[in-house]
Image (cartoon, rainbow, N blue to C red; front, side, top):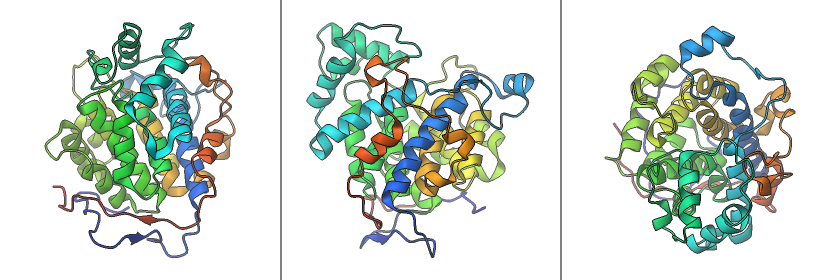
Length: 357
């Protein structure tokens, strides 16, 4: 396993070839399917462990090594990722905050709420503001604008902007403008940029560097991410100890959840199964951390790297949280975002080139 104690910056200058590993034959469609299927698998694996401590997970299941429910299913993480994917498929790089706000009204806020099971605080606060007539970015002014609600739905931006981390981060910020602010935006941008780099075949260290390059160096998100990947070679306990806010009751802090996900991904050196299970067994917001780790590792290794027993359990969304997303499968979203996908991509250089410490 490569050490991640110091993550090198993405090289400046000409675009970098997508073939960091000789003989790499993964194409963009395979990576896209891996990213979004990986997100859904991580979500379903992590859902039962959400808001739990590692000790509680061990007491109930030992170490989680697969699905622990009879009928595993994704949560709001998967359904909101589908939401963002459909939004991108409709507008592409022309996406604006007005488009995002209109979609929130069309697909969520202006409809009968229904059960809305599993919705996070940031989404509920956003809906309340939208229904009061507030528009973006004022709609994001609620008590949980720093949550990981954007990070959980940011992977489609990286899939769409494959090889262009800066563009992926730009689109994620537009998506998040309706519901998030500050660290909540940074967390989504880091995920989107990381997935975009992985989609171009970047090695793990460059994926992490791409994520760090799109957020402020002095942000809570960047500091947590650096601590997590620095501790990654020591294993999941060290990653968790490096970033978890002890005693804080809410587990959906974007800087914490994103750092745990990247730490799990780095600790596994991009291996899908290890990355997702590391995230799950660390607890906290386990469905989101495993979903993000799954998206990163799925983009890195492709859909074929996901154990068939896990991937076969993923069905079209049930609409448990977002009824309008019912019937959409993440693989269909991946295909929508990669029309006539080329087999070869290049990783565009990031704007920031200083190596994080």
